[in-house]
Image 1: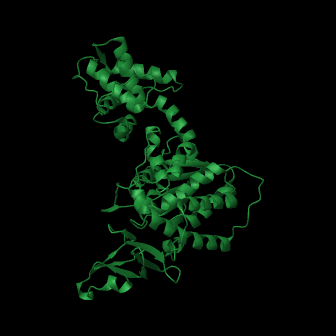
Image 2 (image 1 turned 180 degrees about the horizontal axis):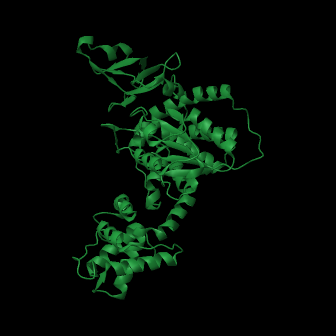
Image 3 (image 1 turned 180 degrees about the vertical axis):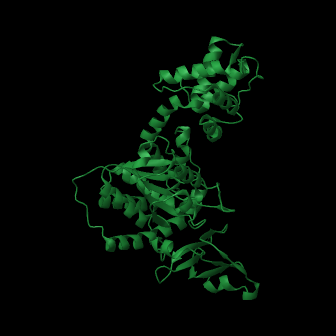
Amino acid sequence: MNGSEHNATPTAAIARPIATAGEVFTDGVTIELVSGVNPGHLQLMLWDGLNEISGTAVEYHGQLYEAPKIEGSLLRQLTLPTRCCPHGSTREFLTETCDIMKNLVGLDEKSASLAARIVLCSAIVDALSIAPALVIAGPDTARANRLMTLLRCLCWRSVFLTSVTPASFCSLANGVRFTFLISQTNVSDKLRKLLDDSSNRDRKIPYRGRLLDLFGVQVIHSDSLFIADSWPLRSIQISVTPTNTALPDFGQDAQQRIATQFQQKLLSFRRANLGAARRLNFDESNFSPTLRDLARSLAAATPDDAELQAEVIELLREEDSESRSARWTDLHVIAVEAVLTAYKESPGEAVYVGELANIAETLLNGRGKNSEVDPGPFGKLLKMLHFVTEPRDAKGVKLLLTEAVRTHALQLARHLEIPGCEAPSLARPETTPQECCEKSNSILAM
């Protein structure tokens, strides 16, 4: 197919141009956002598998597509490829990316491997349901800043931001699939929640009468993130500590050279792997439920190499262990154990929600978490887990400890992987703890 075939439709028959930051059609044809000959000028590049057509607008199957309008100051900060250059195999490209991390920032092997996968994820982010985040910590601020600068050169459509608020984040261009590089001292709870929401591809954020698509990989450098324990488990944390190793020059000329060369290869990697990443069949059952989205996203970074996907298990082993340990004080686990404890003591009888809350509180205190369990929110949590309570009487709401209740609790225990609970091989509960987690967490926060 040559360039003229894409423009065979008469001009009068072509519909009004559609502004786009990129398209992937079912026949494999893609339209990508690229930098024009003059810096700060956007172009689109149409690729049909053999030929490229670039311009401020391109036509495909009778429809004209044009580059979106992006505010000038943002556009000047945006890192985009100018053309496509072969990237080699996925394994070779991942190794090259890891080597850049180790040589220019001095990252250890594991940190470099994780950060490199985040870079590759940014290029195939359209294929992910949950966009991962890379969280950078540690006392070596200079090296952390260098890593952020390097990631600006390497990541797909990266934009470097600071002093970000929820309102300013929502003002960014819609649907561009940025990689957001955020470096600031504090990240508010509201911004943290907004970043978490925007990491879900299917969530759209209402803002001034329209729906925003701010889905994209995030890289966060902020000391405040490590004071709280609530940063989502879709994130990877890398600690940058002081080192005596001398690092090579990484001035503006080196940054420009690396960005130009790497972005060309990253476009090639995206073309070769986006379709495979969308079709990825990855078994994430080896991971604790809270880490499965992250594991799947990291595996999608190398969709054509099963051995590299298997490495994700080892890379996330420490995080998986911490996740499983943390679940001992998760209220979903505690609620299920409280029901099973009550059943063991009084099978077939009724137990009031207040009594179950007391059992839950005892379990929490015994595991080193001194916390009061309010019967009201705890009762709502039980309902979210599909324990059907009886109507309220003078003493409160009660749960009949029937064999069916025990069976349901054991099913939940199996899905929560609670050791010591022998769950029968029965059908999947109507709602799993992972599926109702968001709703119940908001209830328990009341």
